[in-house]
Amino acid sequence: MSVYAILYDQSKCIGCGACEQACQAEHNQKPHKPTRLDASSFNWVQDLGKGTYMRHFCMNCEDPTCASVCPVGALQKHALGPVTWDHTRCIGCRYCMMACPFEIPKYEWHEVNPRIRKCDMCIHRVSKGLPTACSSVCPTGATTFGKREDMLAEAHRRLKQHPGKYYPEVFGEKEVGGTSVLMLLTKTPAQDYLPSNLPKHDMPLLTWNVLDKLPKIIVPWATFLGGMMWLTGRKNKVAEVEHHTTEEHHE
Image 1 (cartoon, rainbow, N blue to C red):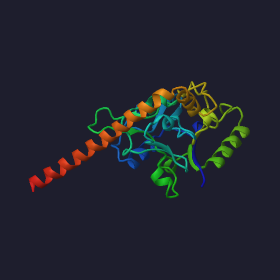
Image 2: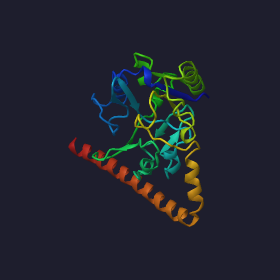
Image 3: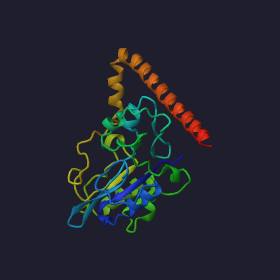
Image 4: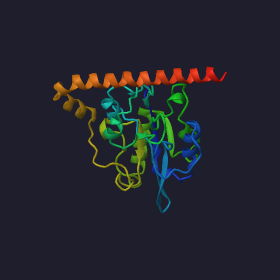
């Protein structure tokens, strides 16, 4: 099975916002102009001035730290590339928000049943052989989609062909072990408001190194989280029964 990736070329981005609109429509969100990433904005095109723009969205890491710290497996790396979230497993601990090196996962703080929200690389489209919504509407080719190896090869081809045009590395090729979003930047990561000085190795290695030193904590903590997961499931079942009871009463 092929692993897919998005290639974003900053030099081609005109800040039209087509990717923002497509993302919102694909995820049933109200049309709006994002000013940052939040629970209702998975994709944000930042205006850096002087005709330069920068896309911000989940990097969908090859070995995601968010998934490594999730105690119930709500976040997982799909074989096709996207990092997905399962609402039936999530207990709302929000460890993923603290662990993400790109500060991507957002929480629906003001909702009755809050969720963790982020770009999932359009897994519902990719799993059907379709490109992501953002890449399918980009009018300039700033965002393209394909097999990761092909996107990486194309990125290096452009770097070699125009060495003075881009920052000399493909952002996402090696950062935190590699990501399923690759970026050709015309500025430094820091100037593009991206994390700089990220390690080149998989960050879950750090997670496991820490956990390996805490054997006495893991068992009781796992028991506690298991209980929390049971309580969450119990609460949802009770709410469902009460909902059906109310409907029958009204009938």
